[in-house]
Amino acid sequence: MDAQVATHEHAHPGPALYLRVAVILFVMTALEVLAFEVSHRPSMPLHELVQPLLNEILIILSAAKFALVAMFYMHLKQDSKIFSGLFVFPLIIAAVLIVALLLLFSYLRLLHPAA
Image (cartoon, rainbow, N blue to C red):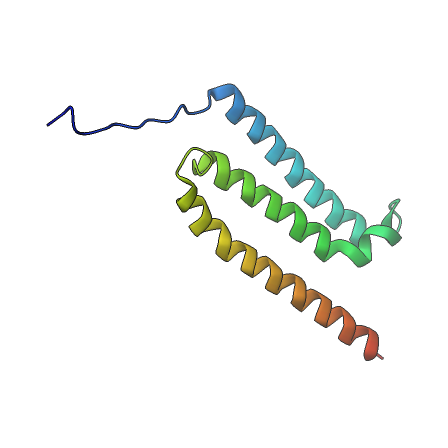
């Protein structure tokens, strides 16, 4: 019976790769905090550039962090492609919906600026 059962194991990354991913996540979190601080302090350089794009910057950075966590710490990168597809497809739909809503509200803000 044991000969019929096929054990299929994937090679998991070592501690060095997990440490690199953790450092990348730390840097991305620091960039999120920096973007927030720059957008809320007019005296800081790049305030005029970052302030109107703060939501988009934070969404992109948090989505990238989420993808890294899902791929490495949830082991989606080593699992079957069907699991990755079942996990990623709804996220793509949600991302498209969020971008569409951001565009809609930006358009409405242009049409009806706050007094």
